[in-house]
Image 1 (cartoon, rainbow, N blue to C red):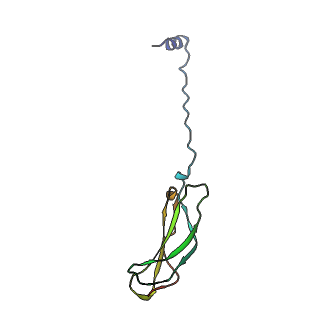
Image 2 (image 1 turned 30 degrees about the vertical axis):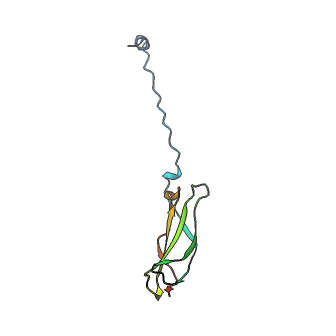
Image 3 (image 1 turned 90 degrees about the vertical axis):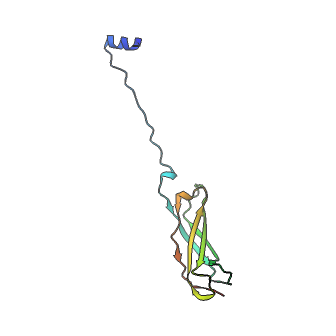
Length: 120
C-alpha cells in the first residue's frame, strides 16, 4: 500500500474521485448522408455515323457540389439502345463520379433522354 492510501485510511478520507472526460466528435462531412447532385443542363447529340459502338456524344453540368469540399468530377455518359444503323433509337444518359469527395455525393439515376436518336 502506498503512503497516501495509508494516510487516507487513517484519516478516513474518501478515495479521490476520478474525473473521466470524453470529447464528443464534431460531425464531419464524412458522417453526413451523401448530397444528391442535380442535372442543371444536359445536351445529347442525337445523331451519329455508324462506328460499331452505342456511345452517344453528351455534354452536361451538375449542380449541388459544395464549394468547400474535396473536388468531385461528374462525367455524363450516353448510349444508344444498340449500335445498329437506324432511326428512333432510345438514348439513355447516366453519370459517373470520381475524385476525392465522390463518397459525399450521389448522382442522379440513369434516365431515357427525351429525344430519340439515329445512327446513319
